[in-house]
Image (cartoon, rainbow, N blue to C red):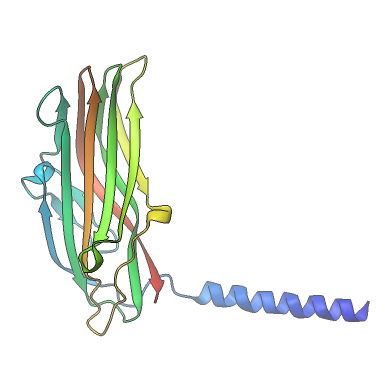
Length: 200
């Protein structure tokens, strides 16, 4: 019994050390990089969105991301191209969540598909895409919406930061597509990213 008690005590102590180390591990670099370049492309942002916040909480406000069905704008996209520098060396960053707020109008038989695609230009072959779907079946949908895309297993990590603290060129593309035979409308108002860091 004494041996068992001693063994359990040692295991409990070891677990406490592991938990303490995990709690002490930083969730982000001591120096968060600053945005050094931000450009946009795509028919959903012919006029550049207004940008507020830093790299840790960027928000983009759209002025002309509006698609309709029927019509020639049933599919729209806006892609942000971001560069940042000044992070502590030895870190990688990824987009964990993309949140788009807007308005949707769907008559029965129509739907909205929306996609968030993320990649870094340094390794464009590594691309992650998350898809969402809203459908109107037996009634009209006319409401404000918050479209949340969690990258999960599709998370794409930046290059490891070096002496200059650069994260590379981050590209985030949001695309919407209206489908069906009825009338539909979608307007994106704001887009916000939630980032995740890890040591490398």
